[in-house]
Image (tube, rainbow over all chains, first blue to last red; front, side, top):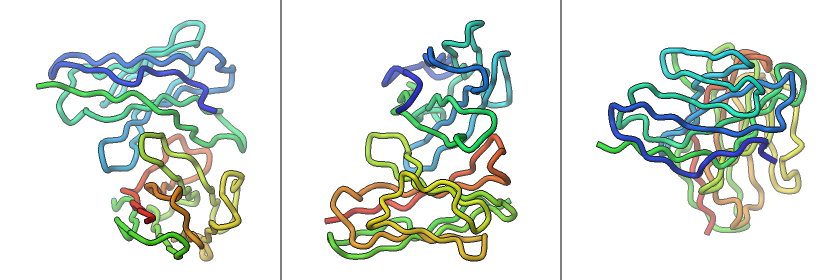
Length: 112
Length: 114
């Protein structure tokens, strides 16, 4: 069972920031929040992950609430190529149960 | 750096036939994964290899699915006999180790069972 809840779909205007929410209210202390995305007809692609501090890389920013029960992935300037399904995944840091458990994700459509 | 290679990209078979998929991971990656992705759903892990050993195959339907990674490099996933509900995209992924944060996915093989 997926341990995260995401809206099934969102739209965003090209050039604007896309903010994708994720609820993970049952997250435990040794679990990280990961984000992957899957562009149509391609395999999933890693975006970013974090534990409790906000994280930023060349693709996106990840904001995790202080209680760690929810997070937001931010694409600062969305382009048409960012149209994809975005998956929020909770995953332990270590151990044999580190498999990626994908839910249904959020279909982000970037509109011209 | 070459990515994860999979073949074939598409396969159409009739139910009760057999089918095999091939995956060549990124060079040097010890961990290899096979996922099944049914239309409209997220990928589901079928099996995880560490080198040529199985780490987790708890979600592999072993009555019809088998997988091997004999030399710890490339891998094959086989279905025998196929059922209609096996229609899906089969994704292969690899990572340098099982503890590595990122998994690198191939483009997948789309299987249609008629």
